[in-house]
Length: 518
Image (tube, rainbow, N blue to C red; front, side, top):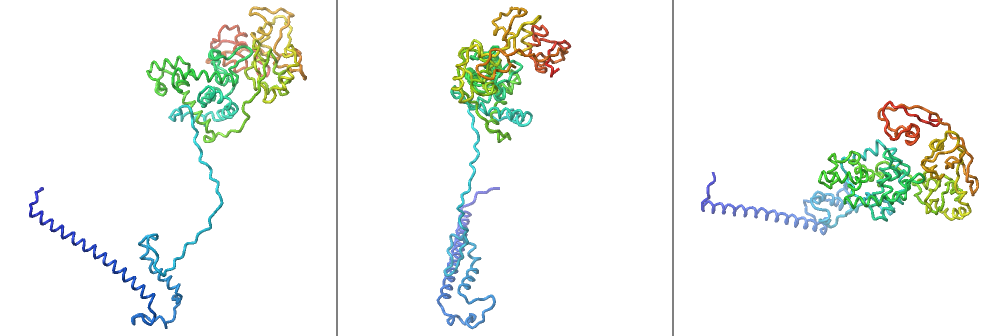
């Protein structure tokens, strides 16, 4: 129980406190006086030892003048002083070495110092983390795709990364000219692995996987002779303009990328249904297909690895960037003629011009610019000017036999009906008459050994083909069957008089298969 103290109690407590404080003061003062006395005594003792002679020493002191030195004693002053210093070490250990000066007359050995090493050691600069000019996040979905690229499709992804080194410099420059983030070039990494010849089930083509409608919308020519979706330069320019339009529409790169995959309409409807313009929130719903929901994390993971492949275990070799010269072609010309005029191999010209589907510069394209190896433009122009226009194409002149149609000839020579119609100025309903001549692009013919080349090559015997019957299985499509047997969907339709691509399980299809595949 708490009681209030009286005045008498308070006075008594005050006196007790005063006595306690006084006692503490005396104790502190006594310790200070003792310390001073000890210091004074030590100083006097040191002074007397340093100034008095052995004869003036007190009688109680041992006679060190006539005593024999023992094995552990020494009359050497330096040794005595060193001994004195060693005896003083316990006291000196309590103080800081830097604060307490040595006792007068004490010899202190300086620590031995090693000679300074003047050898310069190369220090590797710290590894800089890559920076990104598009939004990159790390979440569970992105980490899952990082793991997928490093394990499940590691070899394939390594091939994509290696191929990208050829095209990245020129593609980044195109995006830079359009004022776009350069990291957007890695869209081509997940779309096609930078493969100009990539072709999908949805009939998208080229490194940027344009479908026909979108490609034509952005100025790419697509016909039987040329497919500019496969041109690394023209398709990249179209992709840059398309991505810029998507960003203007959605104001967000994740949404722009999602719409690049799914189409603007589907993403716009997903935004309206979810009432959100945050891709990651829309991703948690079912308003986008799984392919589109994974597209943005897939792009981010591919970009992270592509900008620092060594960190993720991918070792790439240096390759020559995609460089080229250009020269105008004012009439359709066979690439083999161009190769001869340039003084290079045919494959070098073909590799630089993957958009040419028939191995010939396109008809009805008078201002076409063919790509040539760097440094060969002048040689080509000089030689090409001496070749007459009629000698710039290499054809097979085929004489029509009984029962042959344009469809049969197209199948036999690996071309299309439309190509033959355009090359021979034939209408869609034109029938071939027995004995008439049809010019066919000579894909397999050999060009003349000197320039100018001959307009015609000798007719070659087409590769032997065998008629086979294929029974359609559950899950088959014409596209799957065509890929399996190395033919085209159009050929399957022609051989089987199919007006559409719909087939059913159990249906029998006629196939004409090359001999080595039968």
